[in-house]
Length: 560
Image (tube, rainbow, N blue to C red; front, side, top):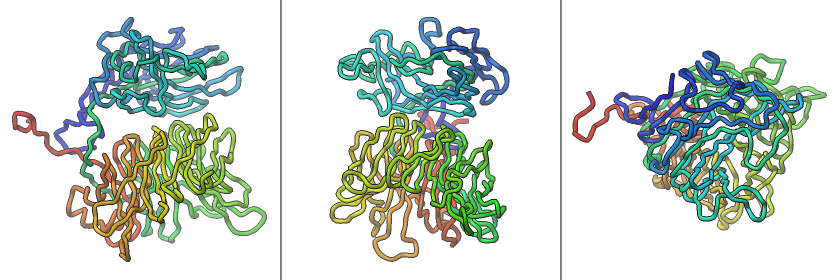
């Protein structure tokens, strides 16, 4: 696989629907060299290896006593027609990504952490914009990192920074006066992948890491109308009931399913197979557990029954799971119950026990305040809710800086359910007259009321999940009594759509009485949750967008 450019979205057969219509994608796979990119100095520290990548060939860097790594492509020594460079404001959307595996990062022989930053530089304006993709640390497996944004934005998108001038108060880097984000993106002369923040100094560090699939995708803005969907019942372990709670970017699903003995078991569903994750209770091969969160690199978090210390019985304990570790008890020996709700690719787990917590293998379980930590994004921003200076409401906690910002309510209280990479948060809020509203909090704190599903006799329920394109899923509630009191929806571009009505096949649609609780959505628009299927109240579903089966061109004829 060399540097490839392809057009996605214009397909002549049914398949997965692409969020960005007609997106042009270029990928550096290293099968035919660096494809215009340059290794960090010294160049001799990096080699291209034919195997062991993600998959196939990749670049392997082993650099001793380095103060930082910079992989870059520019129009000075590189190809002038590189798809990574030029005027990106010609496009309504841009996604940059890279796959990284970290063997080790050491300073003075001790494990260290370093940022992974992408810079877009404009030499004419002597300015750049940058975004922190992740934090690199020892032993991280192959993981895909990406950021999607509007290159035409005048203000810096959430999470982005700028360089070219100094902030007169903090001394930190900012864009020069009068220069906008779009100004920089209109003339990109260099793109850099760096292991150091601007204006930050680091001790000499030994790096051993691998990179693959440096990519850029440009295209039109995500559509304002929802796609049509196919739907899959994920099955069980032989029992009747199952719940799907979360989905990652690879389409792997975390949840809980019943076996023939009516025991509810934590599962990972992947490639059509449901896998039992185990239990924290050594007395039983199969015991109660729930998988609630899943990261893009396949980590899971949830809770399982564990032996009660100093006595008979069991207690719920939060767990972390990976292929390497299996199920890990986050509170071994504790008499207190705990529940893990989410996990990111850095292995940061969040949940609640004696208040909200964040857990890492290095630091263990650390309290971050009262209430519950419901979700964490790939930047380490935690969204939760509990007691706030204004009563009961939501907050966002930055695990890197320790800073917290509080989210306004609509009058009385709020609960939080999810956060995306842009720092946008969803959940519900209660007004002064005790009316519930499904809401989205923007990164600047402003509140968006998501409205009500356009179905008679329904009122707002809760917004459960949001992806990085600001698509939101949740449920609204029937205003009265009903055998199916909850109805799932997908919110796009300011409107809620009845989720069941989006199933393309009317025969299949009829077998689902309701998609009552959509709980997760990824950036491909795939949705998971709990529905009523063939009369069974509680089946795990996965909805996949489907592409049109035909493409009609401007001349009116179908593609041959």
